[in-house]
Amino acid sequence: MTTINLRDNSPAELHFTDNGDDCLPLLNIANRTLSELAADNGNLLVYPRQKSDIGDWVEKENVLTVKTTIDNSGHCTKIDIKTGNVAGFIGVDDLNISISSRFKGEEAGEDFFLQYMLEKTLGLNVVNMMHATSNAPALNLLLYLFPRFLNDAMTQGLYKEYRRNEYNDANVRGTVDISRHIRNNIPFCGRIAYRTREFSHNNNVTQLIRHTIEYIRTLPGGRSLLENDAETRANTSQIITATTGYCKTERGKIMMNNSRPVRHPYFTGYAALQKLCLRILRHERTGYGETGSKIYGIIFDVSELWEEYLAGILQCLGFEHPDNRKKTGGICLARGNKFPRYPDYHNTDGSVVIDAKYKPTVDTRLDVNQMVTYMYRLKSRYGLFIKPCTSCLTADSYHLKGHGEDCGAELGIYHFEIPQSAHGYATFKDEMKKEENRLKAYLAGLIPHPIVSAKDAATS
Image 1 (cartoon, rainbow, N blue to C red):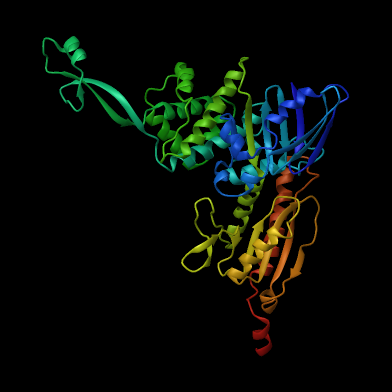
Image 2 (cartoon, one colour; image 1 turned 30 degrees about the horizontal axis):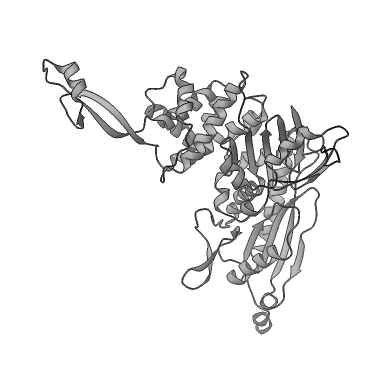
């Protein structure tokens, strides 16, 4: 088993004095986008699951960009790798690839930054659970995702599908089963054998969810995971109530019956939940020596986690967070609701517009053009990119010209420092809270300023 450790948005070189062909399975996932990998590999889970619907990044940016160097004998001697905005675990045949965030401390054994964002975006108490469930980090991450996927799916209602049922009573409400009626009810005793096709909440999908719930309950810390909040408790109870025919010994059969993904046009959230449940339960089976699929694992789009993490901070300050996945809260550039755009955040009067940037550098062409468009449309006084960094830097500020110069508009980059020297997760959380308070204080200094043009200021 070969393991490669990488970091997001970072280049890496693998040199081989002997034959490096053991790493060539990398080519199975190289130079492909998240949407392509997720669509072609049922056991590769991507979170957030809606990412493929909301942006050009997932369509254009490769998970791994790989270039190989082959010698005269046809053997691989060097592999150049460049990662994107992703972190997680990918298994390809006998090759394991671990991608941590680039903000993982040099001495830290755990990726505190990724854990902290998962805690904030998923609403979990990671510090109490990150070592409680399993020694396998990939399984831990799968378990952390289960409550979110369950709650998202249940917002569409409890999954139901048609099932064929057989009855033998006097209340005929389906097709009479003549052969069964003759076999069971002759001489006539007042009952009629018939069969129906009716909706049922007790089906293969809900049974799969029930088996996953029962499996998680057996793990250390599993019950606390399912009882973390009122919504998860209520949805778990609803699944248990619906699956009256649950039987632990039928777990393999239920998993086989879920080999085909859910494609219901309404219950779209259950497709991702179904995939997650299978991944969790198959981990239990692979522990007994069974082999998995060719490509498997879990990948996080860290740029999306960063955006959702900042949303939790900024919404407390009155900022709006348009949802480009649901196409809500956007601003239109032309009358008649034409050319909708979705800035990451803006305050109520539009005086401050903010864009979350996880990548190391801000594109001075595409990113700046996009921000200036938002500022022009909202008549903003301040436009701000917020990006993480490893050292404390002052915010860069640029005074705009043209229409922006008339109202004293500024475009800036705020550097959010990620702690690098924390020796434990509790210390890391304390340092992050200090950075959050520093960001809040900085924004509080921007928001009170009214938008006054240079001409108005001269006449007042």
